Image (cartoon, rainbow, N blue to C red):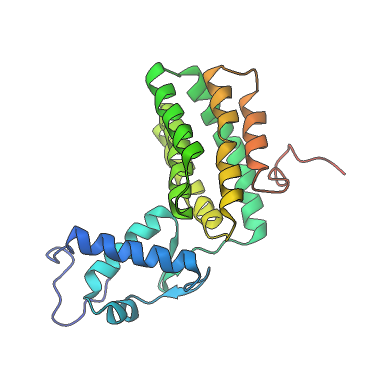
Length: 230
């Protein structure tokens, strides 16, 4: 049962924070996380952040929930909110499972491809090619591209499974302090996936995905049956 501070409303009647204030807190916390003020694994103390910003805890709580949806923050039961922290082995284990699920998503999306879906994906790749903003904006474009593909599968269970699996992994990559050039280089390699599922190339979707993943990870298939046997 949630502990309620004296003088605060119950969850059923508690007012929401103004959207502009919540958005402001989200931007501030995102910037602080990406700048390294809060490092992977650090606890984000709701009360302390509210005191620092001289605001109530409600917009902070809502901002942390939004950051959790974005993958930058993880909720650990009975311990609170923490900056996403995934170890190297976990990254490889998630990546190997990603290959299985996202390959299926790519093949389904290819089979169900329509001009409208193709236009959406083309537009997103165009935005990636023109990107010159923040790392958070780059990560948002990256995730949006993949989510459009997952949605195109027509299988909401597969879409939800990929979202649950991938959002923390995308956030983990966002927290890497890489240069603009490396981030731009990684974004440019989404075109190989786009060409594969739209039929503009003969690349097999799984091979296209592996090529794309190798831009960010060494041997992403390490924990899968695709791993090279020694």
